[in-house]
Amino acid sequence: MEMLMDSSQAEHSFLSSVTASERTLNPYVTGTSVVAIKYKDGILMAADMGGSYGYTLRYKSVERLKPVGKHSLLGASGEISDFQEILRYLDELILYDNMWDDGNSLGPKEVHSYLTRVMYNRRNKFNPLWNSLILGGVKNGQKYLGMVSMIGVNFEDNHVATGFGNHLARPILRDEWHDNLSFEDGVKLLEKCMRVLLYRDTTAVNKLQIAKITEEGVTISQPYSLKTFWGYSAFQNPTVHAEGSW
Amino acid sequence: MSQVAVEAPPKGGFSFDLCRRNGMLSKKGVPPPSYRKTGTTIVGLIFQDGVILGADTRATEGPIVCDKNCEKIHYMAPNIYCCGAGTAADTEAVTDMVSSQLQLHRYHTGRESRVVTALTLLKSHLFKYQGHVQAALVLGGVDANGPHLHTIYPHGSTDTLPFATMGSGSLAAMSVFESKYREGLTKEEGIKLVCEAICSGIFNDLGSGSNVDVCVITKGQKEYLRNHQLPNPRTYVSSKRFSFPKKTEVLLTRITPLKEMVEVIGGGDIMEE
Image (tube, rainbow over the protein chains, first blue to last red):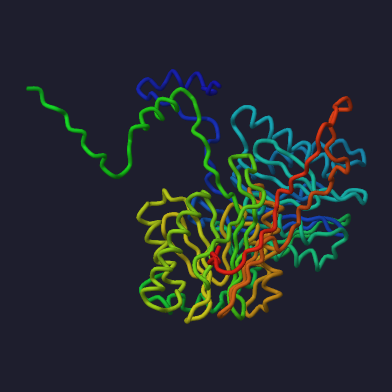
């Protein structure tokens, strides 16, 4: 595995023995889980709006759900700058597609395939885009929901999640998801998952957006927060029977 | 006159003789044998009359299931039970040890054991060994002060909680609890919720599997429901029994039953286990 070194940089650095790395080694500003499900009319996707810089909550209004073209919705977790780069690639893709002006437009399956290739090729060069992406959409009545990870693992399913959502939200979805959920039921199910993530993921923030994509188009809700419950009696006075313990 | 070297009696404590040999082996690339872990889902919750504990029954040795139906809910006292996750030997040894200590303490004081006593004995032991005793426990019981539920981590820290999960399947089980738990559950609702949480661990976590064990502790009474649910039955059992190759001549047939029913007449202490 060779480091991709700029030859001019190598000539100039006489004194420094360590050349700067030109590959992504760590993520810096990150977004946490995204959860998405298929429902009766299309796809529902939820993500919170936090951009964490390590353990600091640096940005509190990061939109991690974006429409792509006419038929797709992209949600991303992981490095925010890489997400913005991916949005630029997709902008170019959609632009070229529109320039054909042939009445056809790229559907979610095609965009998912494109993203898989991009992610996998970057991984092969040891310079990954540090994201887990969820791509959902509806075209000609066909619903599609897929996921791509930073190493290019991709699959399609009725419900997907990234990051911590895989461990906390997917068990709930495996039990409670069924075909032809109504919009209200779908939102309730997603909120249940987001609430568990809010309780148990340290990087989660209580400010989320839910996005819906149907044959008509994309709607991304205004940011709102979930109600939480902290009133268990065991939390009130845990050391009442054991003075000095915790 | 030559000095006769007196054989010094062996001192107590850890013998470091094999460390050099282990170091040499690992340098040569021989991996050390993996521990038998109970890669687990264990849960506990407080309901209106007491505590319910639950556990799966799979024990793993790396990627292999070494015991399909082990017992992870350990007896501590007639009113206190403890679920254990982590290294199986550590959880068994530490719960057995504290159980004996509690018994001696009961003889000394003449009173029923308290959950905080078991908690303090366990946490002091685990802290003393600085996390090397890899036992993560969910301790629950009902004593004179009411129902209690605690979690104990391998380094010795503890939490007092209304509902708790530990082990590799803890996230799957916790997602069920966080979405469905409320205070003042009845016994049937509590058992159902515990079973749902363990099943979530069994089906979504690869380190947990097989069956569901449940233990319900209330004031003055306990119910240990071993294999309360069997969600993984053996579906395709071959109807053809074992048969010898066709050319074998059968000389003698003798069938010895493996399980014999033995009548115990009078006497005999019933071991609490």
